[in-house]
Amino acid sequence: EFYESLSDRPAMGLTARFRFLAPELPARLEAMSYEDLEADLAYLCETYALPRLGDPEPSMIVISLASAPSEFGTPNPDVPEVFEMYRPESGSCAWEAF
Image (cartoon, rainbow, N blue to C red; front, side):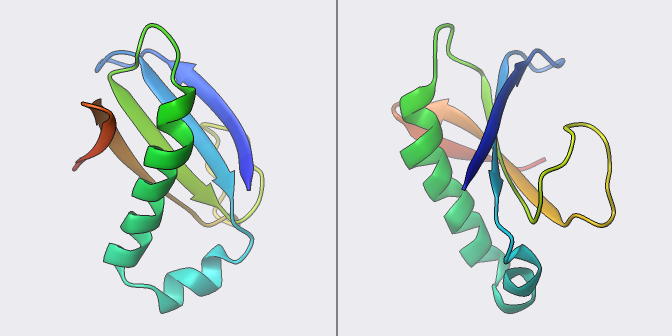
């Protein structure tokens, strides 16, 4: 479920963040491989984030899944969260290892 989108300008340029809620995330993290999890995040980038990018286009897109709502930038050890970073490139999301 989509939760919120945020934009900021860290050192690497404009970043668009798309945050999603996945209450079942703790169980999924135990059962899924990293490759399957990253495929889900990439799918959200391609199908949800890319069509919603504005001008100027961000240099990075961050897709995150959390088990419950939380305030951005405030660590909460009781709320599991995963995220990946992608670079918009030729109409698709290129994974950025960091």
